[in-house]
Image (tube, rainbow, N blue to C red):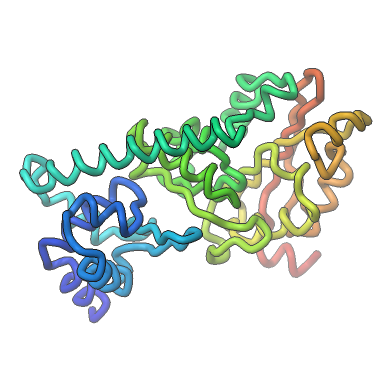
Length: 312
């Protein structure tokens, strides 16, 4: 009861209600929230601190910035926000300001990508069939997904693709520039309430164990120094019985691909993948082959329950 009262007290203030309404629509940093609400940073920081301590907002450090968003389990906050009138003038003005900031963020991210050459698309550069790859992932996605994690989400394309098939989706990436474009993509398409992104190292995910029922890794593993460790960390945050979907290049002998694209691994064969997955506590459930200039494979694995791991 005390936790509930703490959350109700934290939400019962006009500025904090406005902050909750904004952060329910996507992640914003402190400077952006100051620009929307027209208030000073010290004042807003105090409000944000109270909301975060009450677990009504999630605090996401990212380089020099800290972003705030509603956590996945903020059911009380969503119930409160559902009672706010959509035509409330203050909230309407906040939404207009937030949309302007999101557009500026997207433009800045796009300009940075063009300047630094980060709009490069590996799937296109390798001559692979993006449509077939996306269709294979969609076909492999189990029904009724509650929480999905996309490791190495890049510009958030996969989150956009899967948004209407999952209740909540989180994308993580080690590149702040990629995440800036991903946030812009999700905001522009009205997906920020369901899909979010955050900065993370795939070897040390800042996430609790057994949180997701699906984890995806698309064209990520061939860059990993230690694929076994990356798969083990992905399995750690997967619920027992959950699905780990790994899409990557099949084993190939194309040394020029490694040198040209700075790949760490020349693709993977089924035996190596099955061994790594087994070591991570998963069982390989099936594979799919996507032919092309370079063969792409989709490995579908299931996280074993604890009693099965104990027997093994």
